[in-house]
Amino acid sequence: MSGKLIIFSAPSGAGKSTLVKHLLTKEFNLEFSISATSRAPRGAEQHGCDYYFLSADEFRSKIQQNEFLEYEEVYSDLYYGTLRSEVDRIIGQNKNVVFDVDVVGGLNIKKQYADKALAIFIAPPSVSALEERLKGRATDSPEKIAERINKAEYEMTFAPQFDQIIVNDDLEQAKTEAENVIREFLLKN
Image (cartoon, helix red, strand yellow):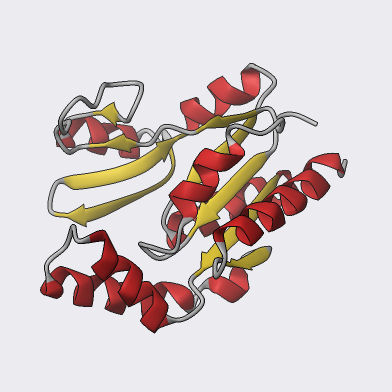
């Protein structure tokens, strides 16, 4: 029942981070996969806890050495990715790995682990509902929200490639659905 991968992907504001945090409190023997990034730590973020903070050169070196399961250069010299060693570390502790990654990264991880991985897409009930959530957060400018909505529309085209789609219209219902899907997946050989 351990050594499996559970991948969550979604457009920004769909609720995947909230669902992942909830699932980490349940009895699924989950550990969160810490991503690597070339950006500087923000606030009280710590290396090895929030992210693995690498310089852009260190990141590129690890790419060359095939140390990433997936990565993306978001902007010039700004990278995010999942280290193979992070997954090996968690599986080595007889735990299941849970990811909170972008849609392309999620599908790349799924390809590499096939039946050992469950890829779950968290969808907003609609694009307009997503826009309202992003506005409600009051953390982004109208331009940034428009950018996120455009990206969300693109990301939602990938949903059919995932093993499961959970529409997060009602958070409690989405939590229950995610728990049921994961429980069923972990019980399979």
